[in-house]
Image 1 (spheres, rainbow, N blue to C red):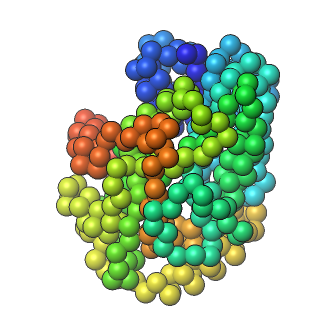
Image 2: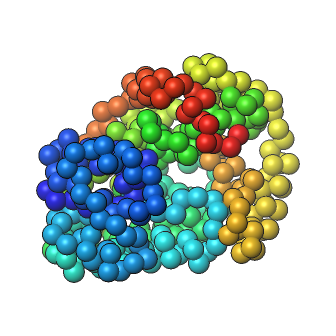
Length: 345
């Protein structure tokens, strides 16, 4: 197939490119000229289309002649105003989807997120499936705009233009330099990650990059998936604080053992969220703490992936295999300190 991948210079997007190349597909990537393109340029046969989601002519040119579009690009940072998130995550998706349809593409695979189902109200969520409704109140602009974009994509499904949304949870693995795992490892290597467990277990579904990428490739070919969303995750959930202790032991960091009162952190997060509604703050800096980031470490969130296993594929990489792969890659780039050197602890 002829495939267009957005977000290919990022972590998950680059693994989607790898997986499509292994499948024998011709891959075109939509990238900005100023992005770090060293890895993509090392791959024979990858075609470059330069532009971005705000430039409609570049989207039309990038979509010309492709059969499927894989949309991985998004604004995922904590920094930004509501207008910025709407423009990149919602309107950018709208422009790309219009360009793809006009160019004759027959499939649109949207990388969504379980955060689109994550609301301010509620606690632990164990084994939820795709019947889970969207919340009334979202934690942040990211969650709200991913939900809006997902709903728009799924509503656009037609017999001649199949749309599908994939929701990989907490993607991790080699080449991730800015996601949750390097950030937490950086804190543990600096000895500054507190224990927020409150003495209770917190369970979470994770998704190794190979599992997310494999599902993405199959979604460009599978039948009877139009207009549907799928949770994508590793075979088994993990317990967050046990996993963090394991990571500290593997890489020589300090495990999170110093407890911090959750009531204090929740009050600080609420105050920060209110302050960061001010555009001058939101536009310039990420918040030091937020209710969203706190919930990711203190609320259990696991997902029933039986629908994805039925219609796409069962995840092939388990936690131990993925961790061995990650450790080997970290060694290959010069060790743990090289891995986290761009991450602020």
